[in-house]
Length: 124
Length: 110
Image (cartoon, rainbow over all chains, first blue to last red; front, top):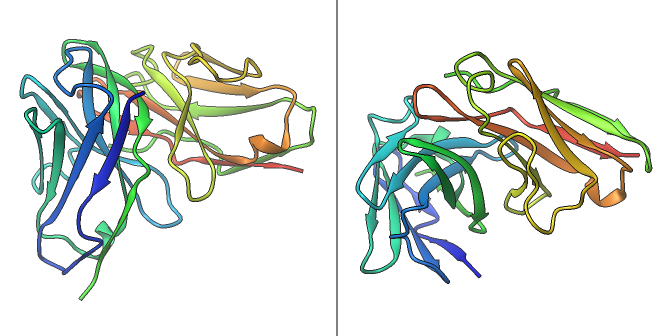
């Protein structure tokens, strides 16, 4: 059974870089049927897609975050990672990683399964 | 990009049916059959309930069904049960190769 687990610091200082890793077990991130995505949820608010990565290297980002976000993959460790630079208080959220179905080249749809999520607080 | 539009809250009694709407545009919901629905209980990760507009993953109750007309997708829950009390989110692929979520609907089972 595929499982995803987020890891990284729970507290990040304003203006610094948020870095999270998603470790995948029970399956390979190199399968060509899937993208791998990051989604966040500010406290008490809704879901917000951050971006997705394909093992071939293709990445897709939320336009509102694109200038600050990098998503990468390490197939040797079966992991993918998120970097968000110049963080502000509004970046405080629960961050989820999830497997995303590849519907066609450059097209992706549903997320399943999801990691349990990790709360990242931006504060000094 | 603007979030897909969902009602903020809905309620129903056990045994009733409710339908949650999700309105987008001709660049997302209206253009692709890549609409999915997620259920989220407090403190938990979202769970996929419907994908590709109307398909149900293995293990999801057949009380959950999805449909789409034009730029609006819908999730119907029949025979409401106490365990259905949760937040529900729709999602769609867009023509810009991005993903949009709806703002979420808080469903209360009375």
